[in-house]
Amino acid sequence: MNVEDKKTSKILLNELLDRHYKEAEEAKTRGELVAWATSIAPQELLTTMGIHTVYPENHAAAIGARKCSQEFIDYSEAKGYSVDLCSYARVNLAYMETLNSEAGNIPKPDLIFCCNNICNTVIKWYENIAKELEIPMILFDMPFNHQYEVNDQDVRYIKAQILDAIDRLEAITGKKFDYDRFGEVMRVSSETSVWWKKAAMQARHIPSPLNGFDLFNYMATIVCARGTEEGRDLFKLWYEELKEKAEAGRGPWKSGEEKYRVMWDGIACWPYLSDTYKVLKKYGINMVTSTYPDSWYIVYEENDLDGMARAYSSNYVNRNLDFGVDNITKLVEDYRLDGIIYHSNRSCKLMDFRQFEVQRRVEERTGVPSVIFDGDQTDPRAFSPAQYETRVQALVEMMENRKGEGR
Ligand code: SF4
Image 1 (cartoon, rainbow, N blue to C red):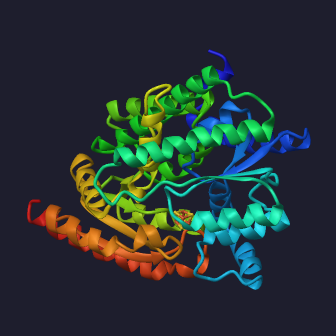
Image 2: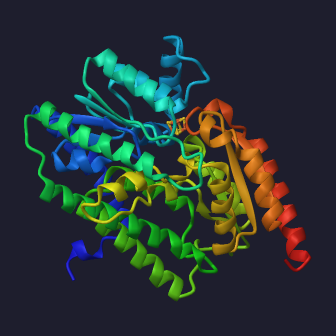
């Protein structure tokens, strides 16, 4: 076995991310096109065209995790951007001007690729970038699913936009769109999503071999490498590592027992990733699943544009309240959860505005206790470590009482 074979998925993950940023910088230097895309956009079109793609939300999260988001936020707010604007946008709109961060750099874009299946904030945020930099923007308008399932009319509407985007990409690049290559990228993208999900599902074992905070770490790669073979192979390797660990009966940590299994609703608090993790571990709580990473389970058949349109409109933030409640109820059952932690994320209005009602209905149906804490994905001012720990302690008390009642 050579050294290469011995690399763990964690090592490969870091290498892949480094390469992702480096290759985009090199491409820009060579004069090739670089796109900035939202995190759940049909990247398959850009990958097919050989356009290097980077993801401002990913990059802002990395800046947050490196604890340097505040300076970007201050810069944006000094320019007049409201404190109520999503902090990813405030970080990125500042970065667009400074193009320099300790968390690594993404090159200035030549093209904006925006999909509003996550929220409508991205429309104005990305439109603003396109306008200020005087570059083209391709927008995919994905209607919110007020009905339970994505309806056929919306599928036709989204598919028409995919076809229109292909025409626009041909005009922008002066190259013909290669449908054979497109089929291949579609296949790889779907396979990557499947391995990502299979790895995440290993947390159903008791104890879970997966420390759920790793979902947040690996998420950077499912965003930026979904259409690549190396991304797919990384998640397959991660799945195999976790499966082996589960078969050996090993839990999430080298020391300490998994006493409670919880779900985390929403985005991580990136500036406090390690703090939030350590508080849970202190009480023996393993975050085994989350609503958020499932958003990259984007699966369809090769060359099936209807399926692709449907898949991109199906992520849970684009689905109605009933779906949101059913989704979490199922996670409670599938992962045999003891509790739920809801992150009331100041940035993300769409994810949060229905959170209290989701909490009420899920608790009514499952009896599983939950708490809500205040925070933000990248604005460090919105999080209070003391409040977080107090909420976690309250959850431990409720979970313990429930266990005492034999449930
Ligand atoms: S965090 Fe929420 S508001 Fe911000 S870009 Fe993501 S989905 Fe939109």
